Image (cartoon, rainbow, N blue to C red; front, side, top):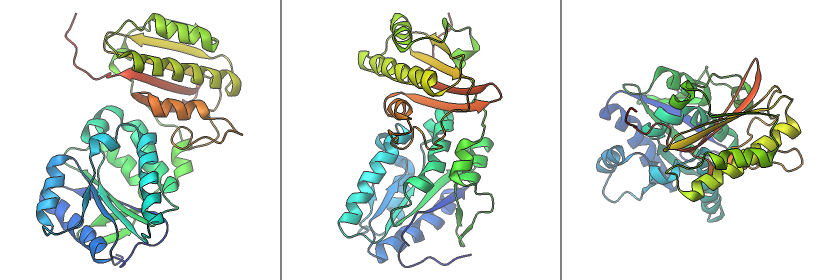
Length: 321
């Protein structure tokens, strides 16, 4: 076990917290947050409302803790990274020598889009390492699926318990985690036949195909964002992937799902999409897609590389036909 340092070292200290009760959550959260306050560090909580109130009630009424709204932060991983980096850069510029955050990824996104949030949990070890940040990510083992906890074990270099904090032997270096093959479960609509299948489409053809199927209840702006993202990803596949390139589209009134597959190995940058692209080596299209699509999944298998883009809510309840 390691003792709590008085202040955070420069560089990111990223720990997972596993809890099975409110008492276990508070036993880790309260000393961690109080340690930040004692050290004069900006100290934040980013928990869903019920747990945020639980923590608030366990701290002194005078505690100068900032409570962040998870619904605003955790819309898209790339946007969350951008928001946190902007916030931390401002705090450091203002003189902060340490920053503490106790948070969680909302259960709704764990249930519906864990794949790209698993990539987030790996990527932030690199994305936040320039800041004097210590954070703890809380996971309720009563409700968190086993495959999620397995990824948590691979993406957090430390584990925090009521007795202290220790190194995690299961931690995997972010580039290795992000570059490795990982299965992605099909979305419900993908169990049906795609409405469109195109071989080696030019970006203009791909854009038109999405627009032709875009007679949905989606806001026009969301459809336009998907059209832009599909165009960028198809262009990436044609320029940097390996033929053949195949585009598939599924659609219903609630959402559209588009996959772009090529037989190459995918981007060489393991952080592609989550961090701004280096224009010299490409990746701009993935960055754009991660900023504007409802969901993005990237996966490799023995057949090549696939990007899956979603507009709308693929998990919304729909009555049977």
